Image 1 (cartoon, rainbow, N blue to C red):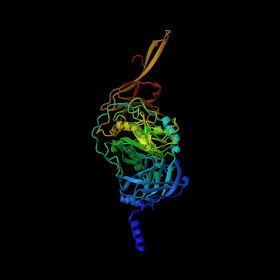
Image 2 (tube, rainbow, N blue to C red):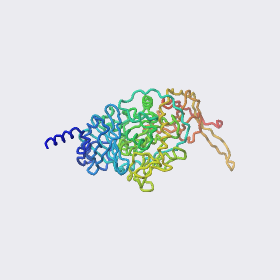
Image 3 (cartoon, rainbow, N blue to C red):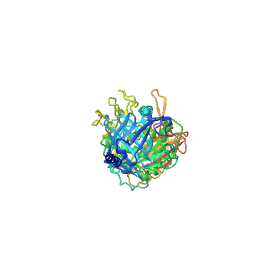
Image 4 (cartoon, rainbow, N blue to C red):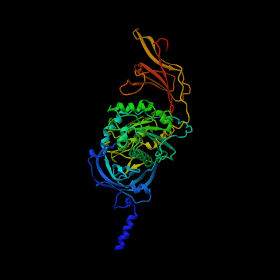
Length: 557
């Protein structure tokens, strides 16, 4: 009998601790008051919080692919077995373990991003979603995500954000991409080998770094690096889950930003920050140079949503399906808590890829079906859906955002994922090549400065029905061509001579944007003290010319 006990002991010790049913990889140890939990971007977004003990060191060290399922005991009533799918090696000793959970919803997943000292995990199972943060082996915190905590922010985004319809245009042939420079050794992702990788540059504020154990202005904390890698893994899994194999997201750099979240200024701060990123101004004056250095198709800024509370994210939908001309618009501002908790990271990049909220499609493909989908019967929203109180009773509070794109040809737990006007899978196949080519155009020089640029108001004297004299006026802008221009002109006006677009300074108004060298100013009241004409080649920036205001004339029409 003694030899049998020894043999049994040897058998158990020969197996990794995480592979035994008796010893879970993650073990629930007790509930935790959320207000006493360690700092997290998800503070305020959890329905409950708990303490767990993690045993993941052996899993990270072995990188085994044929192990028994991981037992994840997140809460007393939330225990799941996750079967191995694959490893994603990010380099620098960091990797993500991808697992599948067989649950009633048919879409359970586990993403555990493991570094030398910690774990950041996202688990979707049985209609519930959890985030795990803490030590690789030792104490960690688990939070169950509360979809209702995002309801007002998503509704606000849906009401506030404009969504112009996409107009199909001939896709320009890409130039040979220049050789990449710089970048992080830990920037590898599972989008390395897809046909159309979308290169994403991620910026973070000092507050976001502090939330993950780093210092303001410093390099990314290890926990922040794992958190961002987990966002990419989750986004790329959404493409795989939805049979979108054409492209994916590739992290090219994770860099600090000098932007500081101000006291909450409502939507204004989100709009202003987005526009400053777009124009490479204020705290983002070096952003054009960074985009060129890293060949970034998309730039995402992560902010502390506890400070900027008005919405979860801000991004623009491209006006048409044309390579390069939308390059400057492909920026997004995302709350760090929403990015993980409500998949706002993937959602905002979805806007840049042409996606709209449910019910917002335009008349042309792909926008007429580039929409999210809400299933009241299934109790879910796809990635682009906000569930803003639509008929059927499925609101953000009642429906979690699942890791799937809309498609009428796919289902989730027996419920369709889309319909004839909600097919983001098809739309992504239209737009992934376009966005992937934003930064891959070869060497393009900055345009020259136009020789002249003027604005003049013309008065026309006529007679009304009763013979009375009627004076009408029309304001025109004219300028000479800019040498070397191959993108667009941008006519702006402001009472701020620096056109800084900073809160507290006079606003900057757009009078015209396009390829013409003359235009009628539809609203002359927007012409302020200073007017400038910018000649822009995307990827290399803009040159500026001061516009001369000519006297009003009755002979210029």
